[in-house]
Image 1 (cartoon, rainbow, N blue to C red):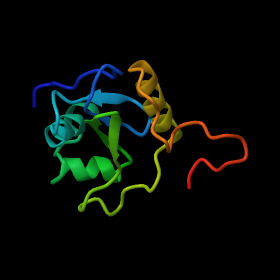
Image 2: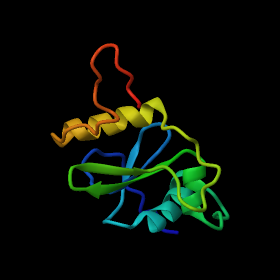
Image 3: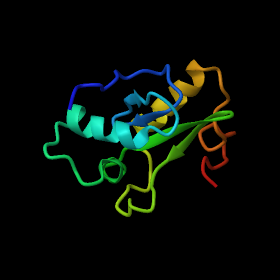
Length: 122
């Protein structure tokens, strides 16, 4: 497979987010399946590729991000990803924070700083 893996960047709207917080942009909305194959081949150097690269990445702790009106919709699982981790890593949280700051978009309520004494997650 020819190398088409883009470099980590905050200048994107749709992307894959690695467990170590690197953002790999997609060429457009809903290109996550195609990019999953490229990430598995060119970044993770998997040969042969898994039968379902998309589910493989999610089960390995990756998240896929889709552009919404006011920020990202962060997908942590799908129907084929029963082994996906329940939580994002601290580096993934930091990348999401940095992306929102970079684009001057309000943080999602689950990521916004909470007043002292209030839980961050309800």
